[in-house]
Image (cartoon, rainbow, N blue to C red; front, side):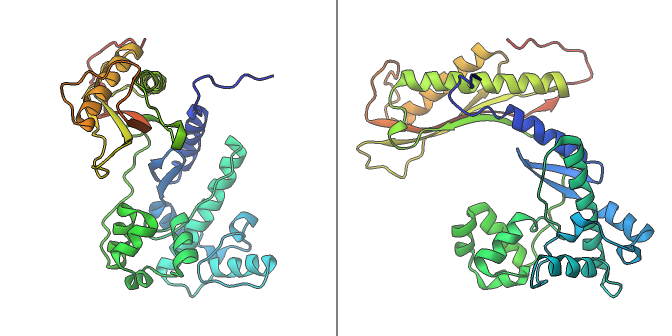
Length: 330
């Protein structure tokens, strides 16, 4: 029998490392920007332009099977075989404009990368190709949920409607894109800007005692310390700020709108130090949340509050200066 992880939450380190392995393969063809643990933006502009100059799709005798599986927005087919044949014809169109030819090159490059990822890392991955970051999975969601085929089709939706469906930030971003407001470029970021660890405690699983909160903070801080020490060892980067976040409720709450305040402090390396600082930050946030700055929050009782999520993060990560420095992660 295999013994599972003892920290009571999913261990994402293997998943995170796998994502880094995939990104290293994708980066062979262009600038990568990590968007999340398993998503990345890849700027294929230079590679697509080079392919269009040297081996344009229209000059190819055939299209590989992986590329023929491409779903091309607006291209309709009767069945799977018909879809692959139509995709092959679309990718090799000699009368396509320059932008569509670049998309075709991008689709061929992505198909090649997906096969390389499968061969070298034994992972499958999905991808979307577009002229900007609007493409990919979000593009499919827009077509399915809103019946949108082009960015211009978004003009009929209010900013509030888009925010309701896709969240405040993405909704506003889509609203701006529909009006031609998008200056984003792929930033060329292979390493994350911060590290974090968190866990949710919904409904009856809400944490209602200081002791239970401290237990989970210790678990999360242990995971965070492992990640920042790995980053320090592998990438020679140091994190400078520790932040504690929480979501909470009050049993008799006349201020339901009030959010649990996040708290930050300088980050000290070492599990015990991070745990101590995180616990102090949480207590400061709790005192502010319950509106009793002078109340001691130590103990096993609670005053009608519950914690529904906890997370800790390490941010302001910078490369170690050229001067030789030594840090010990305990």
